[in-house]
Length: 380
Picture 1: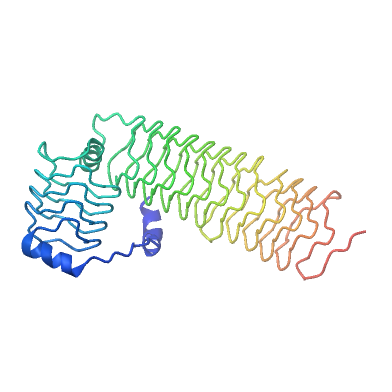
Picture 2: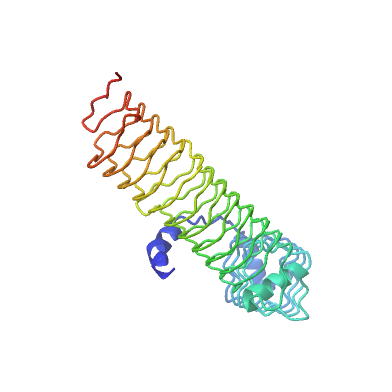
């Protein structure tokens, strides 16, 4: 995991979008002067260092504000908008947070006590983020929008949990179980998911940027439009998983089990993408892009790979026996010692490809194939 972080952290951070907030300077001055600012607009305001004990912020809009370490003891935040707020290390003793919107709020290490008025689900999020899993039973838990960044949730059972739009960035989740969990639009950026069970999990539109999923079970998982950029998925089981239109750029899928996987429209470009010695039995892979990937020794036999873009790939010793490669693009690929026995290469582009030791047989169809020198192979 450490090697992966050094390679991807800076790049990943550069792509994290920061929402644009525009607080009211007038409201901020009023809060500083009087600590009375109900319904005021403090979106994205940096409030660190302010003395806000017993402040009246009823129904105020504090979305994205920074309250890290702020003393809010006795403050009135009834029905306040606290989405995405940083409340880490803040003093929330005797604070009234009834009805407050805390989706995405960071609560780790805040001072929450028995006098803090807070919805039970957010108290649970605070406990998990601050103290880890402990004795909590999270099967079927309903925590959409929860921020559990960096929490220690190793070996947690989240069967049937509702965690849509939750955040698990940098969270320790090795050995966890997500059977039938609803985690669409959820972020697992840099999360440790080694050996996690995500069988049949609903993971569409979610982020696994640079996550470590080595040895994970993703069989039949629904990963449509998921972002697995730079993910470490070595030895993972992706049998029958749906990765339609998913982004696997720079992902490491060495020795992954890919039988029956659906890669329709998936993006796999990037020099870091590795499928070395992977098996692709019964893969649905129409129109995928596998640019500049390491596919040495991979077996694509008996697949329908019409129109697939394999340009620039390392395909040494790969097998395409009886594979449908009509219109496939192998431009600049290394096809040394690759087996195309019985393959249909009608209209395929082999321009500037390396064909040393390549194997064709009498069943190989090269009708209309563009050869390495740019000439077109004529049909008999």
